[in-house]
Amino acid sequence: MRVQVLFFGVLKDVTGLSREDLEVSPGSRLESVFDHYAALHPRLRELSPSIVVALNRQFAARQAAVSDGDEIAFLPPVSGGAAGYTHRIRDAEGHFFALTRDAIDEKAVRRELLQNRDGAVVAFEGVVRDNSKGRKTRYLDYECYEPMAIDVLARIGREIAAAHPISRIAMVHRLGRMEINEASVVVIVCSPHRKAAFDAALEGINRLKRTVPIWKKEYFEDGEVWVEGEWDDSIVSR
Image (tube, rainbow, N blue to C red; front, side):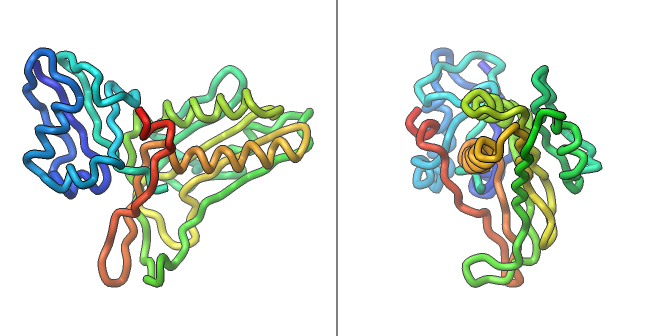
């Protein structure tokens, strides 16, 4: 059987690969595919507790069986405009989720959400700062597993909308190089009342940073590093 294996973030540096076609034996499982690469790149074994696996763009347990033609992705912890969106979803309820490589137009997104019945709009913008842990930051670079990331964004947003008395939610993340003070992520919530909007926006950014497969590389005056993040417990326990 032949499968396609993808690596992201720091795992690309460890393996020297972004993708590879791999021949596997019938009856193979995700853990055996991981073991194959860990034997070639021992550093993967050290990182294993924090690596999550996706099978055909869905989070999966390592015991899951592999079939011919499957797409397998090994994912390191997530780091947590007039846009030409690379991926976008606007559902029947008016919720909006997108990825872009352009500046995020927060005002345009807000206009798409707001309805006459809304009495509150809460917008969170995560922006690039000029320092990290005592080092001077020059710029950031974000990459992600795009087809999976947009689906996870939409799932999170719909779950939040179902759990809070809000009207609509939008979650937009930017990819590629970002300069100091530029927005990397925007979460906007419209609601009849302010408390629900604040609660939903906070839950949105917290879950996004621990669940969506997006990775951040930080470039300093004296080098660069992939930012270590952390998966949500519900994913790591699979």
